[in-house]
Amino acid sequence: MFIPKPWAAALALSVLLLGGCKVGRFVIYNFADSDDYRKFPSRPLPASPSPWEYPAAAVEHGPRTITYDGKEMAFDAFLEAHRTVAFLVVRRDTVIYERYFKGYDPSHLHASFSMAKSVTSMLVGCAVADGYIRSVQQPVTDFIPELKGNGFDRVTVEQLLQMTGGLKFNESYSNPFGDAATYYYGRRLYRYMGRMKLAHEPGTRFAYQSGSTQLLGWVLERALRQHNDRRTITEYLNDKLWAPLGMVYPASWSIDRKKGGIEKTFCCLNAPARDFAKLGSLYLHDGNWQGRQLVPAAWVEQSTRVDTTGNSAWNYQYQWWLPSRDGDFMAHGLLGQYTYVDPARELVIVRLGTKEGGIPWGNLLHNLARDWPAE
Image (cartoon, one colour):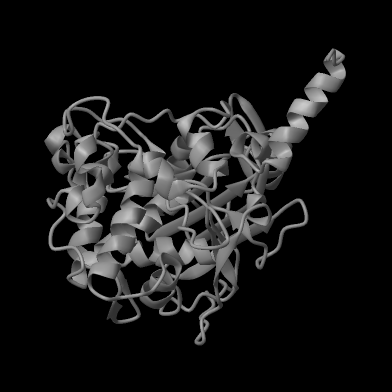
C-alpha cells in the first residue's frame, strides 16, 4: 500500500510516541531543559523537619558592574543577559548577594543535571563510612556480579568516581540513539547498565562519562541491599544529608520509571538555589554541619585535591570539578548549573541558568570569588 511521505512520517512518529520509547520522548522534548523535573517520574525529598535558613547580611556585598570581553555593564544586567535565573553568594554561612530572574524565587525548583554527580559521590562517601562499601578499591562486580562477563571485575569503585573506568559510552544528549540520551530519556536503566561494555583497559585514561556515575548509583543501591538496608537512594540522601542540613524546600530526584525505577544518579536532582548552596557549604566545612560530621572529612579532602594517580585528570576528582589549582572546586551541570566553593575565601556561589549563555562560568566564578567585594 502506498503511503504519502508526510503521512508516512506522521505514522512513524505516532508509532514511536505510542510505543513510549526513548526516541519518541526525545522527539517530544527535543533537548534537555532546566525544568525537566516536570517530565520524569521522581522520588520526593521532603523539606527537613528542622529547617535551617541562611541568615542575610545586614548590608549586601556584591559588584555593581562587571567588565567582560571588553564591555562594562551592570552586574545584574550581565547575569540576566546571559541566561541566569538564580545567583546566590554565601560567605561564612551568610547570604551576601542573591538575585532571581525570569520569575524565579528562593523556592523555585531547578534541575541539577550533572551537579547530581557530586551528590552521588557524597553518598558513596557516606556508604564507605557506614561500612556498606569496604573500600573504593573494591571491584564493581562485588556489588553487581552480573557485569563480570563484561569485564567489570577489572573496574573499581574509585575508577568510576574518577571517570577512568574505561567504559564504552557516548556522552551525547543531541543524538537520540547515543548513550547519554538513552540514559536520560530511557525507562530501562538496569537493562542499559547490564549491557555496558568496556572500550579500553580500566585505569589508563580519563573520559567524562555519565554512565560511570549511573553505575555508581547501582553500586550504591546494591551496597545498601547487601546490608539489608531497604532504603532507596533518595531516602538514603534524605536521611544522611537532606534532613540534617535543614533543607527548607521540598525537592525530588528523577527516576527512570514509576514502578521499580532507579534514580538517575548522573543527573536529575531537583532543588532550589539555597539548598544547592548548603551542599557546597557542607563541603566548605569539610563535611561537618553545625557540629555533626555528615560526610567523612577525609572523603571531602580526597574529593577536592589535585591528584593524578591512576591516570586521573588533575581537574576532576571524585565527581567534582577543580577549576584551578588554588583549592577551589565545583559541581557543574548541563546548561550552566554551578555550585562553586572557595574555601580560602569562605565563599559558596550558586549559579543556575537556562543556558550557559556563552560564558565560561567556571573561570568566571573563580575570578569573581577572588575579587568579590569585602564586607
